[in-house]
Length: 231
Image 1 (cartoon, rainbow, N blue to C red):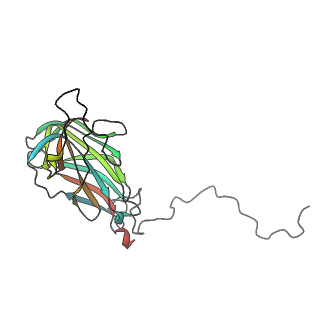
Image 2 (image 1 turned 180 degrees about the vertical axis):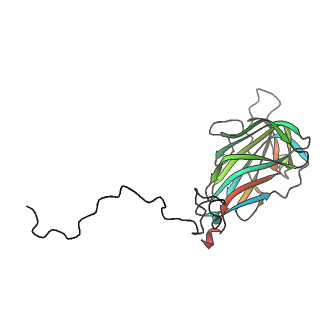
Image 3 (image 1 turned 45 degrees about the horizontal axis):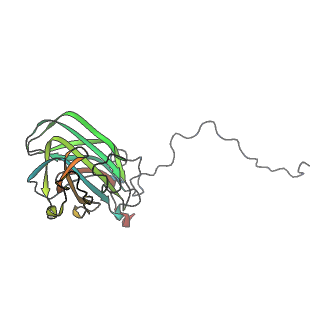
């Protein structure tokens, strides 16, 4: 039956005009995935890092992994571009592929890889970094690896690994069964937020691995200004 003591403050109806200015998160020391240095300079920073190796060799394809350090928690990093160095310069066809986790076991298998950059006639500078932009940026969570396959047909430069002699290119006899040529990636360069791991060079896209090498170039990525321990 109806109550004999109705409330004096009934529930109000939902508004037909919700606010167009929801609570802002900018200023919380975390670069959220929908924030950038342009929209929230308080939290976000664009980092540019160039590997310290001096490239002396050339190869068309490079496959390697990058990890986001634990200190990038909770938002990780977002990779916006790579910079490559060409010995020859001039127009070239370039591609970038990526996959979550390690590349080991997928050196010649495109399963799970995604093409994130393609340019048919990219003008490469000679002995100077050329930028290969990635849109949208690739998100890497803290303590996670992301693999990349960077390819430019005329070749780009890299640094020889101390472990290159351990690389198994396969048997000379086509019918010979050889153990899978596996590189156990080891770190070779880093900054406060990311780690570069050694990879392999390839003659073609997902084809004909040649040697163990270190990607020698640059990376640009978005991250929180504050490291995780300071958030």
